[in-house]
Length: 345
Image 1 (spheres, rainbow, N blue to C red):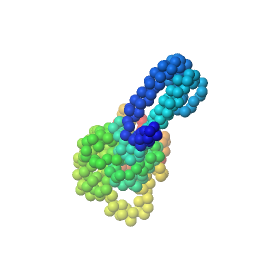
Image 2 (image 1 turned 45 degrees about the vertical axis):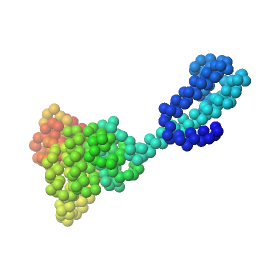
Image 3 (image 1 turned 90 degrees about the vertical axis):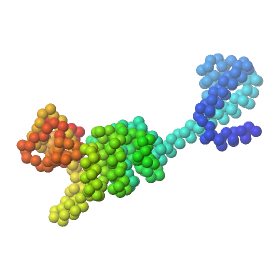
Image 4 (image 1 turned 30 degrees about the horizontal axis):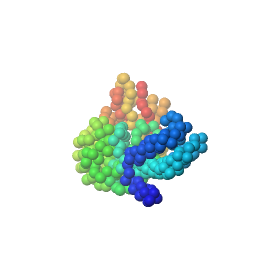
């Protein structure tokens, strides 16, 4: 009968809540104390701390032997009631704890965990899991980047593709338009959003929808083949940057200036030699291009490229004259082996 009871409990442990199991443990703790009191086992119940110590040591099968019943009644209580039920409850408690831990790990691996508490993170919305690995590697290759969690978001039913990569979390969503789903990835607190969907229509729609959900300073980046759609998207807000293939320009440049494609590849790839970076000018006064060039070369071994007044470089000036003036908080584009935290005068 007892064996059947234990088998029934074990087979239904996943249906028992942790609160119920803790309730059983508390019930056993109190009733055992009461039985020891009736059996006059004073050394076991001298204080609540002594009894708690005996209860834990015996239930966990450690059994130091420094405390034990001395009366016949006390020994019967231990043999018939205390040990069988305490071992059962303790084992079930450990099993339930293991189940909870396993469930949480599984939820994390399958992307079911909520990241509503995140802030200042990068959201990578992707339909290309294999390409997302390259994107993540390029982000992490920037050693001087602002430390941000990268939250990989997809609709695909897969396990976390990069569980051992630091700063990378994974979340599965059924919808990119449902408010509760977007709250799960803390869209309103993200600093950066990269949208790399399966096609132009998906990227365009997600960029438009996300624009209304993110904070004003959040930068949204996506990729479109259709130049007309790209222009339309750029007109929707200053926080949306659209990358396009520029295939015609690249092919002509490669034909006219051999090796230019490899030069562009290196300039765009962190961790592979000199790369293009952008930093704001930290100064309380305007400075000339000649001063910026000298500072970058002498102090950082970097090459000045150009400057712009806004983050998307809509008025970009490449290789301006030395007398051109750069005002505070403007964006300086430069070529360097690593990103500069600040350009300070």
